[in-house]
Image (cartoon, rainbow, N blue to C red):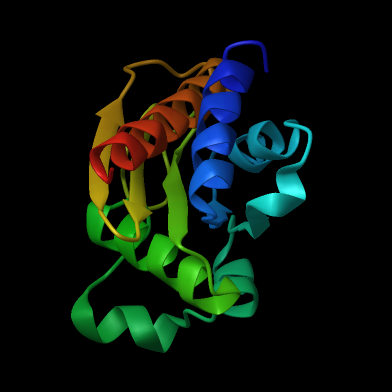
Length: 164
């Protein structure tokens, strides 16, 4: 949390100053993105909610994306288009300015789609949008979770700065 908190504090200050809000939908980070944002005192001013979208059942129940929504267009988790959809869906369902998402494989093995451990896609949607894929090359689950959360928060901070 030590490396995540400074980013979260920067993001919080920007969101509060602008009167903006965020929703988070994360997977392989296991809630670390939300935990960092919520660790900042006064988080209720900008954080509207989030969820760990770790399974297809959670995806359907928490962000209203069913298998039927994904299969006809060939969409699968841990891809950039899916990360954008996830961020958008969280943002729309919670009526926020920004949506942040992450979907990947933290390890020690890859995911069911064939992505290696250390693979993650993350997106920010809102007044500006950004999406990236990272590959750590590591099978260290905890290290990957921290890296994914740090990179997602960095992407959010960068996108906020570009939206000025």
